[in-house]
Each structure stands twice: as structure tokens, then as C-alpha cells.
Image 1 (cartoon, rainbow, N blue to C red):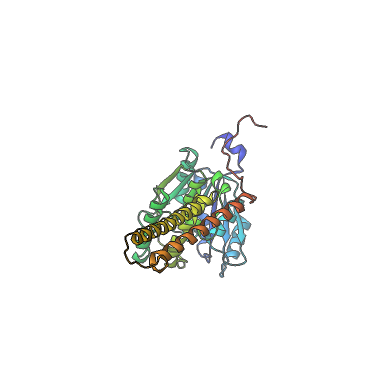
Image 2: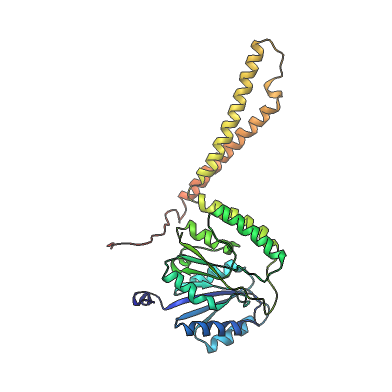
Length: 328
């Protein structure tokens, strides 16, 4: 790393590791990280976030931190989820590059030096790991492929494995985004919408689980799809909600008015031709038109109210400035 970079960051690499009931794997994982990074001469810190473990994970973290100054620990009073752990960990990082990895030894620390290089030398904002060869059952790999395919299509980001826990970030990325709910799966999407578009991918090793059991079930794919819809909507329309609600409302209102106009004109024409016909209010299309008009007005008002909330919000003018020149 250049002298210019070292002057701005206390360490070169910050490693954020969220964990839940991983007491058995922590000693081996931290020794492995130390061995790899010491061989490459990288200064580093490891931030272990205990997400409400019910085993001896925190006691193990405390014992390890007492003998290794590279280790830092954060303990939640209950299980909040991986997104919460990452968000808190990101705030505590001091490194030029921030890497995330799981604590179950399925992510290999051998990948860390190359991930660091891809950020600092290749100029990428984010590098996502791709577990091309996985040691998971079909009940997990098939839904994962479907999930990744849908995310690629909606987000426009060409990654094979969005949910891989092994990722590297330029420090500006993790300091500029907020991860909440179950959005940790979509950090590349969040980063892209924040303006960090230099996103790369690296094939990484996937180790077989050595201790414990997986903490994730199939329900995460259902929740994941809903989260994708949420983050896509929020990212695109957070600052301009009227563009979404107003457009839908206008289309619905105009459709209702056109149907009503057609019914009225048709009634007048039939009457002029002395053709017996039902009253306009007796036709099903009239009620469809009425519903379309009402829904259109409601959507438009929803957009208007959302715009008023956005204009009066404290973060209405929060914009990420990449660089400044000759400004006082």
C-alpha cells in the first residue's frame, strides 16, 4: 500500500465477521486469518459481531481478544440478524479495504489478499465472491441459482452469487450505505444505486462446514425476493415518489375517464339510432371505470403526500460527494 493511503487509514484491511453460535470455529478461523495476512505483510483488524449467540461464542471472543490486539468484539443482547451485525460492524471499521466473511470456516481467508489487491490496485468499489463449486445440497443450490438469476435480471448487475458472505469493499462504500432488515443479500444492489458501479467478481473456495449446522432455511429465499422488490423500489423512487405513484395514478384515472366517455358516447349513439340499450350505470364497464378513476386519484394523492414527506425530511439533500477540489 502507498504511503498516501497509509496516512489516512490506521490499518490496511478490516474484516467484519458476523456470527451466531460459532464458538468451535472461532479459534481456528482467527489463527488462519493471522497466518495468511502476516505472510502478506498486511496490517489488519478483525471485528467479530456476536449476534445473540446462546453458546460460548462471546467467551471465546473475549479470550481471543485478550491475547490478540488485532481482534475486536461486539455483542448484541439478542439475535438481530446478519444485516444488523454488518451495519454495526461497518461503522466500526478503520481500514482502507473492508472484507466480510462468515465464521463457519466455509469462507477461506486465503482469498483476502487478492480481494484487497482488486480493490486497491484494480480500482474496484466492490468485489463479490463466487462459490462456483459448492458443497451444499440440491435443496439449497437450486433455489440459490433461481434467486441469483432473478436478482441479476432486476438489478442489472452481472454477479453469479449475490449471497456469498465473502466480499471486499472500498471503505467509502460501507461508510455510505445502510444495511437493514435482510438487505445484506443486496449490498451490491444498494452500492450500485448509491453510485458505486465498479463491481467485480472473484471465484472463491467454498469449504465444507466443519462445525455446527447452517443457520439459514428455505424461507430466506421467499423473504429475499420481497426484499429485492423493496430495495429496487426504494432505490429508484425514494427521492421522487410522485414519479411512481403519480404515473400509475394518471394512467388509471385516464383509463377510467376514457371508458366512461366511451360508454356515454355509445349510449348517445344508440339512442339517436333508436336502439334499445341499458342505462350507462347498469353496465359492468361503468363500475370498472369508476374504480379506475377512484384508484387513480388515490394513487396520485399518495404520490403527492410522499413528495411532501420527502421534501420535509432531514435527508432530502443528502448526496454522496466523491471528490472536492480547491474548496474551503
